[in-house]
Amino acid sequence: GCAQRLPGAPAGSPGARRLSNRSRRLDCGSRAGGSAEWGSSDEQRRGPRVSGDTDQEEMFPTKKSAVLMDGVILNGPTTDVKAGEKFVEEACRLIMEEVVLKATDVNKKVCEWQPPEQLKQLLDLEMRDAGEPHHRLLELCKDVIRYSVKTNHPRFFNQLYAGLDYYSLVARFLTEALNPSVYTYEVSPVFLLVEEAVLKKMIEFIGWKEGDGIFNPGGSVSNMYAMNLARYKYCPDIKEKGLSGLPRLILFASAECHYSMKKAASFLGIGTENICFVETDGRGKMIPKELDKQVSRARKEGAAPFLVCATSGTTVLGAFDPLDEIADICVRHGLWLHVDASWGGSALMSRKYRKLLHGIHRADSVAWNPHKMLMAGIQCCALLVKDKSVSFPLSAFGQ
Ligand code: PLP
Image 1: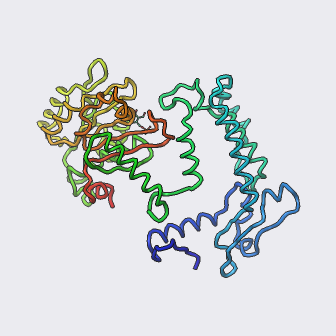
Image 2: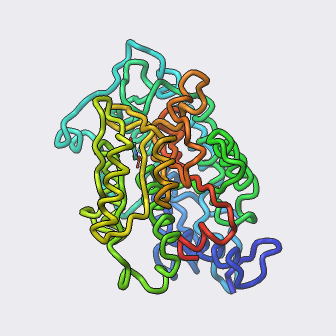
Image 3: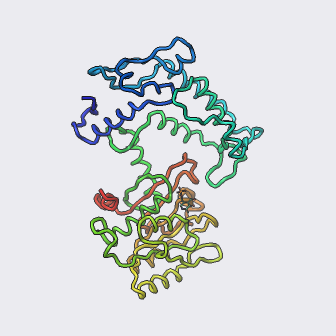
């Protein structure tokens, strides 16, 4: 009888099931704050062990506000609230002093570089059976900061970074502190609406009248989802029939496309040999005439073209494929057009550079990573889809 229900969620509903999963996870005990003693059910029934020594006290804080049912603690392990709050406060101060306030200091090093074997000696990464006292955990936090690359540093130059964005940082603090999951409205009412609003804005920038989208872990995953959608559109019974009985599906991408195309073709059972890499010009842009020729050739050879992946901002050269001309070819051959704008999508927000993506509104799907050029925290990646029909994207993902 320990499954809890969300207000308004009927027993057995997804909300109720998910919450009871979370209760189970809490029962496993966590290392920080020293909850490791809650390993055996005997100990759980007896209640917390209280120690006299200060370090021990910190390691095994007294349980507070335990909710008991039939002698079993339902909300365990509950750590000492006051000690926990103090720990969070001290850790936040440390992050403020050592990360945020030093982020703009050019006199500080970007990194205290150590080769892996030496770094292993300097860091205490052993996972022990017992918990650690708070002061040790704070020492560990200091070491994590000390030996990490300061990606916010003004002298840190890398594709994904350009200093510290204070506002996206606070947004991340908030999401971490609230620990939401956008799987249901009951669990995450605000963030669900936030997701909807952000996707809507991105869809507006693309220039679609309507659309749908999903955030996911990486542009590579967005590209794979897009490939899956395009294949589903081409053969809607793929979910039931699987790969058997399909013709030889073939897709087209520029020779400069991201390697995630190969990965996706391999994961989805399409096969890397069924990607036709289209020749590019001296600037790394796909040559539309070459694409047209390759599609016709593939058809003549008996293959089934189903998708063209154009790139807006190629990984190495930063080239933007000519989307309008590519879209014409897709219309002529009846092919799904996916634009991998993982990197270059954010140029849509620049009055000066948005012309580089001219024609993107004609795409069926777009991958766009605001963490790359918009300074959103890593990861922030969206796959946007023009076809808003309720069942289509969900059907393609097997729901
Ligand atoms: N597509 C392009 C053009 C990229 O440059 C990248 C990454 O650099 C990706 C896709 C993959 O994005 P992620 O690293 O988020 O999976």
